[in-house]
Length: 396
Image (tube, rainbow, N blue to C red; front, top):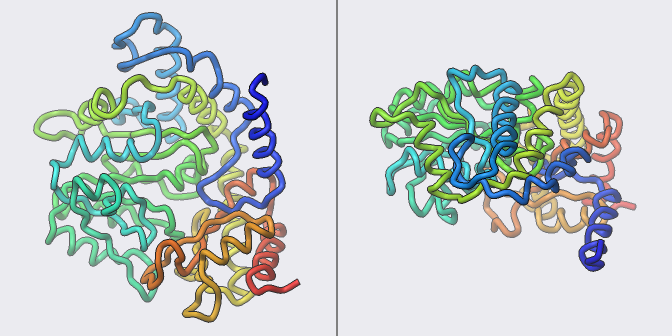
């Protein structure tokens, strides 16, 4: 590379990634084929519009690529083309979610989602996000005793508040979501049900986590995390759902382009297409199941060592650890810093009923997708848990 500074940064980051234990549940490692596609000549091409309806010439292979990516997305999640539409152009998860709101919810309308402190995402209606500035969030309640979604209250609140859209998804909720009960809440108030499966999409594809497609009207996902693709996003929407006699899939497409974005990043879409094919394999199903096995063992060993695991365990790829433990332990910020110094990468995180600052919260969030990609198994998780314990307790 002629740019030696950038070359040096790439080399240093490569060394860093290889030298640490990566427990950030939203990170993973893409294949060389994905990286090749991501940096391919496709990124030279402008492609405003959608397949076979572009605003620039020279689109023969661009249209073929985007259509292939759409078909692979539908095939991976076993969706029928006559029932589901798919948009692979969102640049990331946040604009994907924003596009759905813009398409379906009037400005100032209500959306229902998990609060940030209970494991929700910024784009699920948090006040610091554009989704909380343009729309009003109705929070999905968490039972503070069990630290699980309070489905009965969710339905009651939905009937009373009448949100236009219910968003189900998380960044720090370790349990399986009951999509059927979420559907019942949406039907009770006449809302659309959107599932943001960004964190667990790879687990759904690998048949290790329940599919939301049986119950949802719209499903959004990022393409990295458990899907092991490049950073990007996909929006799935049912073709039989309408708003004022207009197909919601058409409205969502218009919200992406020309509403939020110009030309899509075709190198990104090429990388996504490669990852989707890799995910549609027996090896990936085995991987997805191992991710959850590893997470369960890691949570159990940390519990045995005296750490409190939020909700008592995990059924997914992530674990929320209460490191503060009512002042008996250490803050999440201190825990993150100590672990990074020891070569273990995680992130500080709020927990249900949080009493501390989000900048120095009560817990940490850890997960197993990245280390499972590296081939780690249950016995490795036990060793990692013991190392975490030693570091946080200041043992040598």
